[in-house]
Length: 297
Image 1: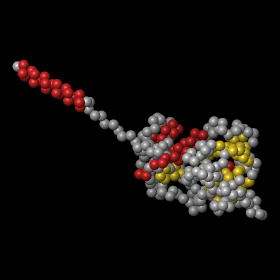
Image 2 (image 1 turned 90 degrees about the horizontal axis):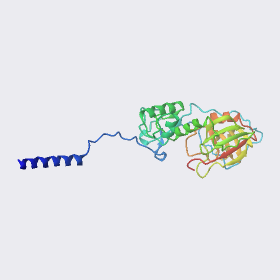
Image 3 (image 1 turned 30 degrees about the vertical axis):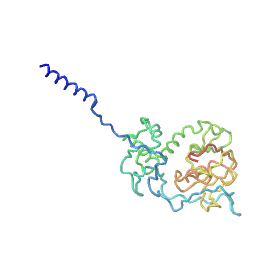
């Protein structure tokens, strides 16, 4: 009988040892959505919705020359054709063909996930969810960002930054408050607005400043020449609603996507529509104050 008890006790010890080694049963954990850096991304629509009249318009190397007998009040520059879409940068696996739409919500976490979550009043955890994606997708559709897949890439991040600046663009106080009209050019956030004293008289809009090695010069200047239908005398490309403030550097419109490419050759680019509106706000001798540094240059 003692021998039988010993065998039973030994068997119980072995079972207990196996339970300790095996531990509790495994619990299934949902995989985290893939997270991407800006450097991992490519244009979400190859080539983008280009227009025939498009062309980069970087005129900073030469002083503008107005042909004799012409005035700065040239005829109205030609309008862009069709709606301007902003092409988001996405993971390679989420690129869509030109002329098509994103068929499903992105499961990937973009580099501007937290900023989008905060602005859209989602739980800020920096991880993509189906609810996040639907909210981001609606935001992208509202602001003509394509593909509207809900991926929080750099273009979505830039538009979020613009929308957050609308309420109080000069909150940090970088643009001096003067009684004169002042065009405030914020290279850090890639925004500009116009203020007079404490009042914002032209709301913040997106800009595209100088690319690496051709940065827009910082400082305080005055508009010395306005030419509504200017053509670059260096690159022979259109510069609609050009307002020159520092040698060949000007505020002017472009026909391409304002968020496309690494930047200008020094000018401060605006959308055609924003440049036209700005033309009616600023005058010759108004102040242009430029500060900061374009991200990535």
